[in-house]
Amino acid sequence: MFNSKIKLGVIGRQETFNRLNKSININDKTIWFHCASLGEYEQGFPLFVELKKKYPNHKLVLSFFSPSGYEVKKANSIADVVVYLPIDTKDNCKKFLDKIKPEIVVFIKSEIWPNYLNEIKKRNIKSILVCAIYNSSQMKYGLLKKAVLKFDYIFTQDEKSKDLFKSIGHNNVFNSGDTRFDRVSLSKTLNEDVDYIKEFLSEKECLIAGSTWGKDHEILTSYINHSKSNLKFIIAPHEINKEEINNLKSFINKKTILFSGLNNENIKTASVIIVDNIGTLSKLYKYASLAYIGGGFNGEGKLHNTLEAAVFSLPIIIGKYYSRFPEAVNMIKSGGMFSVNNAESLKNKIDELIGDKEKLQKTGALNSSFINSKIGATQCILANLK
Picture 1: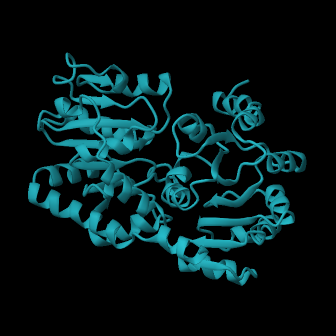
Picture 2: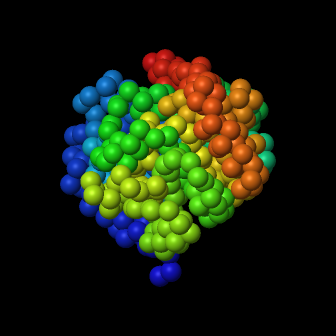
């Protein structure tokens, strides 16, 4: 009644079996991929592509837990059918697996559903967990530990997680690295243009702020309102709702337009674009000179994807909470990323970088070099599964 996102999931799950009945026949061979949300889909995408190439006669069933994944990809994904994952009850698990009869199951990162994993194991269906990254405190929960052991193979993002899974008794564990590096590298080759953005920039420098929250908006709008430079701004809030968008727009005293309202008449004189949709952000980084990634003021574990910006050789600025993100820690150490504490430190860092084009380019290059050094997780997974 009170949460539109939950409501979408409830309504969507009522359609799961109807969608499967229309798309999956009794003689179809299938591979099942499951992701929590859009981020996990993007993380698993390089592996999905390779498995689809390897097994062209199999149908790919893609399930999501969250509306933010399903609603974006239900009509636009690599899969043959996209559904919400039915809630993890024993009856639902049996009914779902009876319908799709997968030959292999791939779960991404942290999706651990005990009843599904029990039923998958009972049916001797091969199951894989990829991009797993866990710590010892999580494994104190007996139910989680027991469920994780049901996977036939686990591929971790780091050596620490690999050692953890081995310590609880799992023998088929490999440290493959993170497929997100493969994904962003792949996205760079797609070269997808976005209408009107070149006209908006008019050959000026641009700062793009991705997946931002209220605390990010406070310091960003302070900088935008007081900046005397010709710098252009693109802001893509994490929460896309009318109230959030209107509040953000009201705080900015320069000409601001919504992405949904772009046209040839208003684009050149605008200073700020607010992206009011999901799925466009990753296509916009290539137009920017500098990136700010949100979530770093929301507490530990909230920082959003920094790799999508890094692959385009952008210097990156984030908030003060980032210690749980190894890629952020490493990029800060290498000099391509900077952490700020407040509006003043944000201003100083932006002005420093924008004021020195040579430094701007060299700093961004450090981030793309970091990405290139981490590519290869997908091929590692495939080689071990062969």
